[in-house]
Length: 221
Image (cartoon, rainbow, N blue to C red; front, top):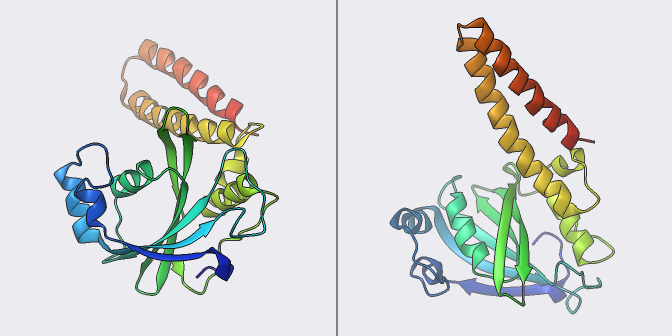
């Protein structure tokens, strides 16, 4: 699958019950999320393990391994809460490959893993559109695992992160997250201005809007 070397093949079936019955997870799972596991996921297979021992690539300082999980679905829907539960309980970076009706969708989170404090922090999940199984979207290349991980994130996000300022991937991801939060504020404030009847209040709100738009502009290249 995905044109990866045979040396990376792992092919281990993972019962989805291990996640929603709390066998892997450290905290209780909401009943709604358990239902998503049952109704949305058909099967989970740990297809590949990518590291310096299975592929001709150097270790990264940030990424030790990239695991490929193939997830067969019952439909095109997969709730983010399911991804968070799986991703938060496995201390490696996971590329999800969702499959349904001869189509694929890819997902990869920006995830920080601390071995010292044994914590996992998922900042944002990036997902591709649904595409044909024959369509070539991902390229597993890079000078090291950090670089490969960044290339995969860029492919899945349609190079969205390249729009943002930042010397590191982390900086660009955090700018991306802040940008979306402020953009939401801009949209809400614009609606508020449109409905505001008092001129003085409109002037105040427009001043706030101008500041927010300046913040957005400062995050972009």
